[in-house]
Picture: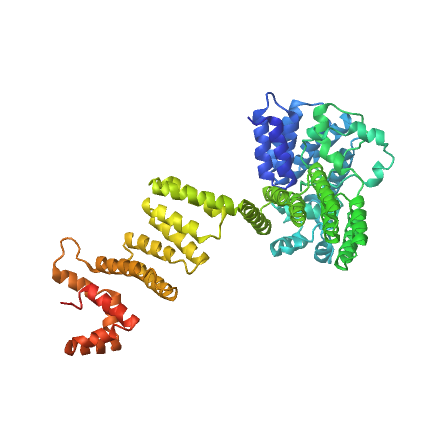
Length: 596
């Protein structure tokens, strides 16, 4: 049975992937599976609801969290965030102040309180327009919002641009739109200087933090359960990561803050991306050592496993496969710790698969391609997996080849066939085929046993393979024709026999008599009367046979038949022509030509 902790970990994974509804479902299951109410789980779910702008549910869970543990400061930041989302600035202010009463050094609450106070001042100073008149009176506002990284993507929506213009023209009349469109809350927060994306703590804030202190406050990785609610959600309230300088807290509280502590690591994304771009340029120039150095620089500046994946690619192209393997393994491990996008982890696994494929370690290649598909399914990796699996089977088949063992299996099959033990004969001949896949006799012999078991289609397939392996193997043609005859596929049977006759004549005609016997049998069965059919009905049916109609409409055959009516002996001369003989025999079998 899945435990509450497992559901909680599952919720964290979904949150990291920004699949907030799934995260909510998992946290809900964790709450249901808990033996007693857990304030951390309600905090997590509140953050997930807030990411979906579902403020009523976010507020409800935040209130539940606070009621379960009124002494836990973090719960009040959840409460403040939900209130801010509603536009209840006074209630949000109270919640932040309560947090600071319990935890005076809480940087998140300090920043949030400052932002809320700014929002209240702006609203109060501008009457009912909530301060929009002052904020939206810039004639270049649209251009600035389009150029601002935080709002550029939003401003690609013409409907949103129209709303901004409406607020510009009538701030007071359109103020209520802020409460119906969360994107406008992001825009106004940007104009007020509020960071809506919950940024990590300023790197300088940790500059003086000792390593000893950092270690003492970092929770065990296995207990890291708080989703990235503060740095990845789009809640409409500011937040920063909490200081690592605080004294260790109870285990549950440490669990809830784990993600924030990870994000407090100093990082410089711009510098990292610049180093990555330089690395990419060097990579294209095949200066792999220099590219690797740049990717390392990027990783040291900002923990994004994309840089490790790139480094592994450079090591792969350089031919240093062992180093590339270690880098990919590190990318997976680090990616798990920082809850990286599952697609990036999938790329790490896929690259591991490609490296092992290059090393000709097919088993490990399959292992990591499969792991990659478990994280994220892509056609390219799926194709590589299936191709590698086929290669493994092919190699296994080749390794199994043994002519001596094949001969032993053939003799064993022959013995079973003589004893009329058809199933074991099929099994023995199957073993012969595996041991000697290029020996046409194995397929032909198995076809003979399959015919005895009335498995005619399988027998035909085996005969086709035998003919493909050895086009002059007449016995395979004969067995195929027998199977087709038993299936009453007369036309196909006769075509197979005609092909066999041509091959046999080139080889000396040793089997021509057997071939003709089967041919005549097929022709007779093809045109014989069906039970309950009168001779007239039989003749009418036969006359409509497509092959008979074709022969009778052939001008050459019409001339031969006309001549034969006047001079029956002339027909014998024409029979010396194999093609003519075939057609005349067909007409004789059908009863169109009657001999005395």
